[in-house]
Image 1: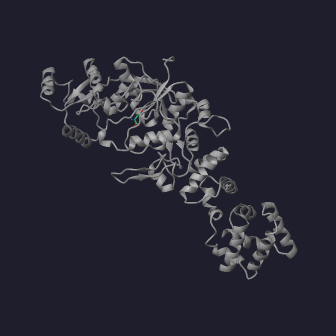
Image 2: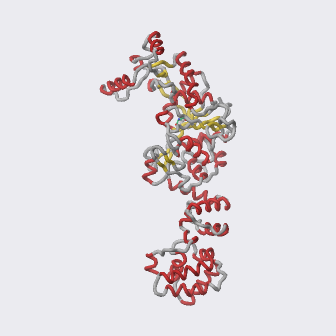
Image 3: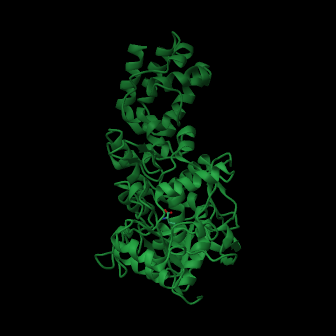
Length: 512
Ligand code: GLU
């Protein structure tokens, strides 16, 4: 088992947009594959047609691509063969004809059986059990003896029902009172008695396999070495272990990842929590055209994929050092599946924004400028030149968490202010104010309009007149920017230049 080539898969069901918890599962699979020189596959588990949502598969592929963790093989794989790889198809609905033979094999080896109980009959049994005080009736190694199935009916009867086309399902025959054990990479040894497991359906009446059969058959067929998936699948793992044993196949190693928890730690992080607390729980914006169901995403919120990925990596794992900022390549080197926490990981949106802020600072000047210009375009702003953009961006970088922040607070750099902060006007735009800025404007005109000479001229003016900074500073800011918030006004004036500065001062004098 130790020498198997590493092949892992992300196997989502296309039932809606991919939750960020799913992206983290994909990420951990990807990191593990890459650090072991292995392959990362994307398989779509769409056997439950009732829950199929159009557009979900394309969303998953796009989300992984945005994160930079596209699969090597399977749906969305860019190279290899046109089909996505040697084990195509990678969509379970397209693999439907393959599963039947495996269910038959289990029947032949007495590890599975036909069951003919109708939904109405099953409901009646459940209802009777409920009346008798057992609300959790299960089809299991005890109850199956009084149901209508291949274990209780004669061989002839079964054959007759099958040839008459009577509806049936195929169920696993759970052994009685056996301990199923396996070692999980994250949880250690897991042991479950089969008396606590039920006779799950493996093949449905429509010939479609259930998740359990399809998952195990495909993991084997696709030579998956490690199954890395969310904790919600841990209860299914003992059944999967048994299925590997029944088929006589080598079992992959398992690693069940901790849940993503709400910020208060109480329960699983859901879309509702995001809506309520004002943060996305999906990587990309989503809209279901049929139902008009929508969700907001990190990408559209202005996050960089590298920040989103870095943040996700830390939800359940950390390197055990002080280093928090990692590129994807660095994560490939440092990530350690054995060190993933058992306990759920609490999500913190403030921390997510912090990651973005750090990555914003780490971007190369040209990449940052590129995203800045894109954002400016989205806001309909015209940028005079790259030099101008670079300077404007740098002026507003100090507190920015997102590149968009450097634009939202800087609109007055691009256009003359059309409104002036009324609270500041009331307090600072005194009868003397027009005089201050008029005199200053004349003084500034004699400088070279560099930040330093403008500031110097301003200081000399205050000293000569005996004015306090608080008396004149806000007045100048108001005239130039319409607000008193922001970076050095002299830097702004240098950026917009003499002509615009003088025009703004004149406009303030005549309007205010
Ligand atoms: N189709 C399952 C899901 O939607 C996959 C679970 C697994 O990885 O085995 O998450």
